[in-house]
Amino acid sequence: MLDVKTPLSKIHRATRRVESGFTANPGIWAYLESGVLKNIVATTSQEAVLKIVAGNASSSIYESQDIEVGSIATIEGVARMAVDTDGYQSIVGGTGTTATATMAYATAGGDDLTVAYKTTSATAGSSAYSKPADMGKLRFALTGDTVVARSESFSGGLLEYSTVTPHTKA
Image 1: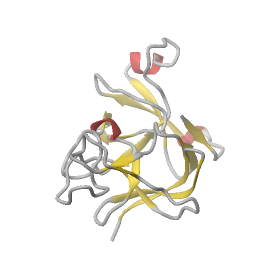
Image 2: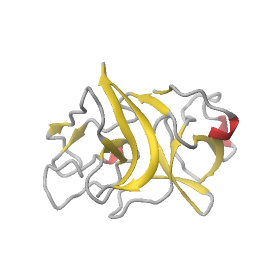
Image 3: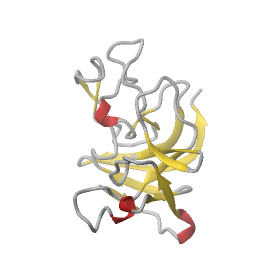
């Protein structure tokens, strides 16, 4: 679930071309390469141009019409949003496929957030680990990650955040 808290104009909602086989849920992030939106897969380096997906690809012909014609809506620019576990990573640790710890987001917010892109890490159990199903979801930013958002609050399973101008976490 994606709940956009900021009123958006047409300039904030862009339609992007997608690669064949693109999968989407509102609230996940994808990356832009050569004008085409692609799903984030496990890599050793983070993609540079990240976009929030606003559309859906499901079995419903109404929800996935955009994907059928090879495009999907994204949200551009700075906005306030809220997501449930469809949009944020909730578990970490293990080998990236087995959860060993629950990720605890601060209720008061203020944490830098990045997009999950790794399923392995040099430090076992660190928050750099993500399950493959969590690729493209928000998680805590670590040193060297691209910060794309800042958390505002976490309550009732909803993470509220504001997007920021992307920058590298020092």
